[in-house]
Image 1: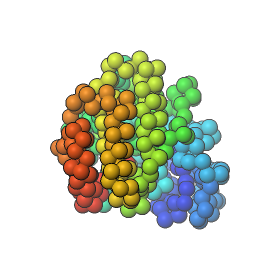
Image 2 (image 1 turned 120 degrees about the vertical axis):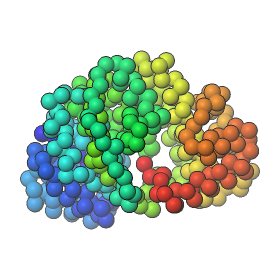
Image 3 (image 1 turned 60 degrees about the horizontal axis):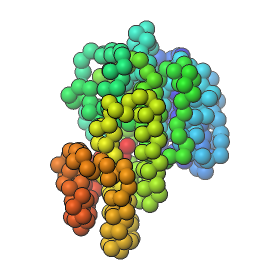
Length: 345
């Protein structure tokens, strides 16, 4: 059986579409756990409605504690051999669960599928499924999580998200894996990295199984000064995960690459975000403080090429303290997001 965990918080605009996509699966042997995380809109009522309509739906209500706490509650209560996470504003392919069941006899520890968004045309990269075993294969996959390097040209795995994947429940239980509730950004990456560093095999199916919904009220684009503290805690946790998994020497360069990616996020979504009303001199002082952080200082010394040409230019401007130029690059990046719909997850 497949356990599907959907954390629900004020998602009445999207929840029915999400739940309908799960219940419309061509493979019937699953349970759907709707974890209502203290919603204040009509989400709780919608959850109960689905539970009355289909015996495979189980609903749990809790006080608002965040998406990680909701997913962790689902992990405590689910009963399937495989675990799939779906966000309430997204939806899945009718063939997603059938593909998991078909590939399960190969006994991989994790299955990776591809994703797309409903408003962007995308074709699956195609080709046969790829099964890989052994420590080096999993370390390589962990490194790709940090650098977002696809397994195949044209592939589209959402590496840093827990969605679009199938996890073995016995592996999760064996190591007591949970999402870190103290993080509001990067919690998926920590869970996935902890899982991968304990896994022995993965199966990549180049099939589009998961659909992200791009919408303007996404939390990932909002201005949150607390993101800087979250980033610091995230990097501490990530480094500890790599050390405990005996993976840091092998993935030191990939870790620094990820650090520079977080630095880019800090500049785009905090320091030079349009809603940041600080005078520019205070923004410059904030940049100076960020530069003194040990994680960022070490990564900047490596001189790594991080992302697109525009983002590399942003890093160069930041390194040389050309903060007004850095602000301009951030503005250009946000304009490109408006055109392409990027920047959600």
